[in-house]
Image 1: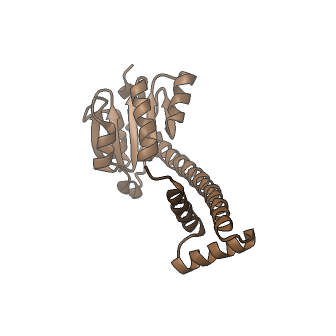
Image 2: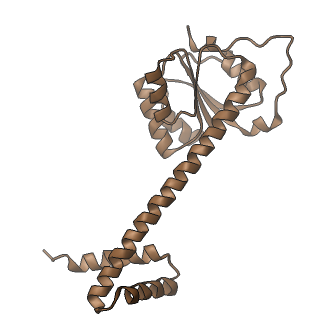
Image 3: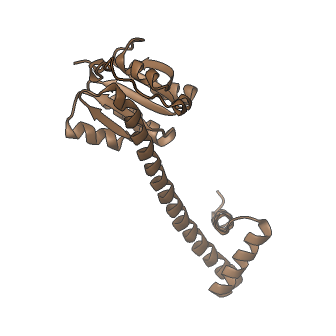
Length: 218
C-alpha cells in the first residue's frame, strides 16, 4: 500500500471547520510519489495549511528546509529508510522543527528509531483527513515540550560548566596573588562587574590567558 492510501477520502456529507490560524503554518511535504492530487496534500489545503513545497525523497531535505524555513515537516512513506532517519536526526540538531511521519510500517524498532531521530508524531495505517488538524496540533505541542526540556538541559549544562570555569580561575588567581579563596572570588566578581560580563565568561578568559602564558614556546 502506498503512502497516499494512508488517508481516506473525506465524507462528502461532512463539513469540517478550517481554522484560519492554520494559514500561518507552513508545511514542507515529502511523499514517496509526489502528486498535486495526493490525499495528504488535499487534506492539508482543506485545513488551510500553507504547503511551501512538495518534494520526493530524492530531494535534499536539509537544503530545502534551509531555503523554505517551514513551520513543520511532514513525510509520507511506506517505511522511513535509514538515510531518511539519519537526515531527520541531523535536522533535529541543526534546524529543529516539528516532524510528522505518516507510514504503513508499524514495527516498534522503526518507530523507536524515528522518535530518537526527533520525530514528533509517527502515525501508522489509515488516517481520516479530518484528523490532520489535531495530529499537527499534538505534534506541535510535543515539539514545544521537547524544546523546553532541551533548553533547560542546556541551561543546566552551561551553569555546571560555568562553575567549573570559576573554580579553575579562582585557583589561578590564588596561586598568582597568594590570596585566599574568598579574596580570589571577590577579585573575580570585581573584574566581572568592571567589564560588564558574566562571571563565567571572565573566568574562562582568565583560564585562557593563564594557559597561554604557561605554554612553553617552541
